[in-house]
Length: 108
Image (tube, rainbow, N blue to C red; front, side, top):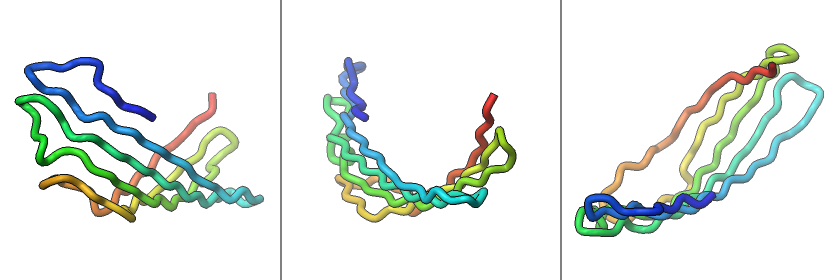
């Protein structure tokens, strides 16, 4: 996925970022499906007089183990923990130590 700004505002041009995601899941006869994702993101520095150039941009990689559970024939629940395996950011930036995601899916 490419995230590219198409314009500037108040002398600020946002970063351009490229994201790659991929994963595998173990299909089995159980109602539980283990999964593993790898997410990579690289981001350029911001531009313009209003940009925080010194504290923007970087490269990040996350490993995300997870599990999907079939609740009924039409609903599933999922849970993932996103863990950083590589972080290189420019300047001072807040980056997560880990991220917990959960949700439900329904078929109509």
